[in-house]
Image 1 (cartoon, rainbow, N blue to C red):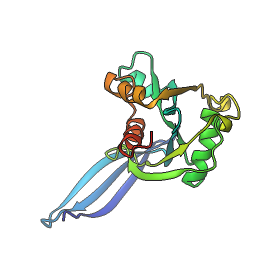
Image 2 (image 1 turned 135 degrees about the horizontal axis):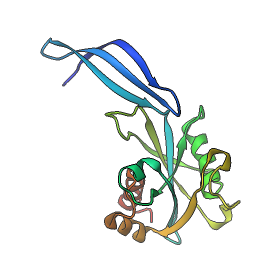
Image 3 (image 1 turned 120 degrees about the vertical axis):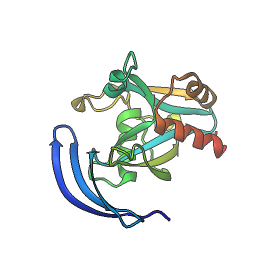
Length: 193
């Protein structure tokens, strides 16, 4: 089994504007006994949670559409991205966080969520671990118009889409968000809708 011994020599803060970008210089002792000095940058934006709401009877899921600057910079002509509801933990535990985000973004108040797994989404450069949840929803759980928190600059469109259509949207490229694809595939694999 591959194992390395790490000794951090120096950490520099390159940016601490929106989130924290660090440059870390470290020594790594490899299995062959050699020590090598390396330097890498890591973006620390905190940990997050994501949820996919689904309705067994209608076979629908709740997704959101919002502007994502990094996708625009990388060639998405509108910058709009269809994705599952998600947010940063902000010192909450993952379950409380995702319940809060669900209410803010989608307009549904849920009380019961199921954690299905945790995953690093971009471990080569981002420290974030994401906690994945699913939850059933019904029309009775709708409490407001949703759309995010205006003070945080959120402008979120709530979408109710048939599960089969959402899977077709992955194939067509309309859905390109990794966390959303993972959650939709999970629902399909578990035959939940």
